[in-house]
Length: 410
Ligand code: UDP
Image (cartoon, rainbow, N blue to C red; front, side):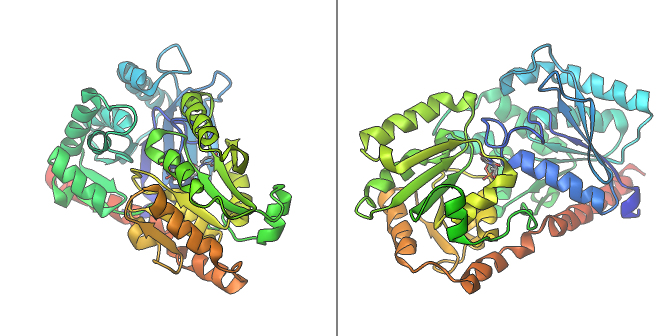
């Protein structure tokens, strides 16, 4: 089958791929869905992403790029809904999707779902349409519960994920760790899981002059430690705040925390209170949500970007920072151990204990400002993660899944 003929129904039910990144439920997965859809479209596939209406002003059909569209469907009366509440409206979503498809006379070759809520809908579509279903979990409820930080994931999610792992035709995991967890916790078959990493938009995330970026953002000559992400306990931001107390001797040091919306207010207030208690309030800036397009300034202005997480399914922020030439200090989450070259492009620490984070941050801050050659070599280390490379790997996998499906059916 030629790539140009492949028609994909992509599902991201609870989280809108063009929503506000850094909000409570909108992060790496939304970036993934948006970028991969655009890239698959560019490479000749036809991609329709289906998501729930999140805002009454949403247009029903939005062109995302060549051959790629975003389609909003109603499910439930309330636009603003906790993601668990969305579960009750999944049959409604599935029926609306089927009516839309019939009304527009659309046919798909494959359904590609993201997150367990979409996977639930995908399980129905694979039967209704007699086509293969490929899924990506992005995070796993069982792994989150095993870590035990933040909200407990309900049994409903664990059971739905287990059913999905066993009943979809193929799973794409973004790391070997995720593949192992799917086998361990959900009894998934290893031969039906492939590992394909996430990508980074290399055209957007480009290095710029550090001093110029600092001035532009009003940071003067301060040394900048940067955190970017959703504001939630699993991200370990409290450990990073505690790490700052080990670094306080250095003058002109600033921790900039990016991310968070009204739904993250409780966690944000907890972190602000902690920074006051630690007497570092004056050296910490909470910048709230920053548009993806503006982030290259922050990554470039930063002297080090820190990922102090207890859990990341992948850790896109590391790729973005490195694409801008800024080193990363991260815990051993996602696949960061193989992405970060120890001592060259940053450090992976064994856990997010404040002194472990502080030691490596201090080491990087003690070095003279990197010259363009070292900035470019950090960037060079992640150029293999272009979305076009990732999309090629996804297309290859989808074709294999389709071939196997037809062999089994006929
Ligand atoms: N992000 C953003 N603006 C913000 C906060 C985060 O654009 O204010 C983006 C960030 O650039 C990254 C994504 O949200 O692309 C977070 O992805 P990551 O894989 O690091 O974390 P996840 O959300 O999957 O836990």
